[in-house]
Length: 418
Image (cartoon, rainbow, N blue to C red; front, side, top):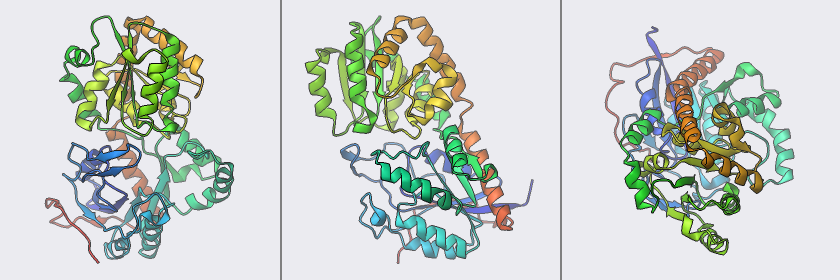
């Protein structure tokens, strides 16, 4: 065991319920001495989420168990280049004596470039990547695809190690001629142990009864922000086309399409078998997946789709479109037939009918999903992240900084002010 640890700064736009458990575990890693710099505290503090169309504050702790700093945002907070403008990152990185800086802030934000330049001038390794699985953007504009073809090979060569979240992400980087030895797959994960533990405590019958669902009925769930690119209308129409009287459809999520979906459910004659749960906070989601029979993810733009991880941890099998990154890594290994062509409502209707027709087979797929997700774990993510950092730091010719004697001091609420 080496007597040195790599001093690493993770730069993140805001606290995320999926990332916090990883930071907590990384804080105990024998090779890593980590700190997180948050550009905002959205999520840990109540704030408006434009995609949910509501004020959101997650009901699980996001700032406990690791060292973090809040770097004040001088930007607008909008989805724009200067939406995240955190000049305090400069002083934090230049004075932090970090071996590596890992950016989870996208290159379309000013703070990414502040962190990049500060890291380069400080001779710290700089790691970043993307969750993308293709060059096609959310809005599908052709000029953006052409721009990425030109710019992305140059952009990702700025990284001392490129980190990607899925197998399709690795293929995308290779297609851009990024050398394979400069790419690390850090699987996009949730806290499997937490989800599995919470699922075991669910009273499935009671939850289903609260939805008006009883013995012999089947439940399909869609857990997503009700946005256009999630294509919830496709699922609603496929459900209506399948025309199965003892099957219920649940939408767990909020967003601007809610009223449209409610109206369409009525016009399709299925409103009595459709439930709109609204925004479901983190602590309540395990009950939703555990009480459902199958999750459907119909998205046209879904770089990964962590709802797939969540459902599988709760023993819920998944049907997903071929546009979701999780389809390749998580859904297909369990049941390749459950991956359908995005936008094909007829194919989705057929899948729904086949899935609910054999409840015993569906339960078996749930067990297979539960078994498979255990290989797509936080432990695997952290091991890959630590290896990516080691490679990047070695490439810079630096060695780990000896861990100071007080490195294990409890982390507290901190801030950087200019």
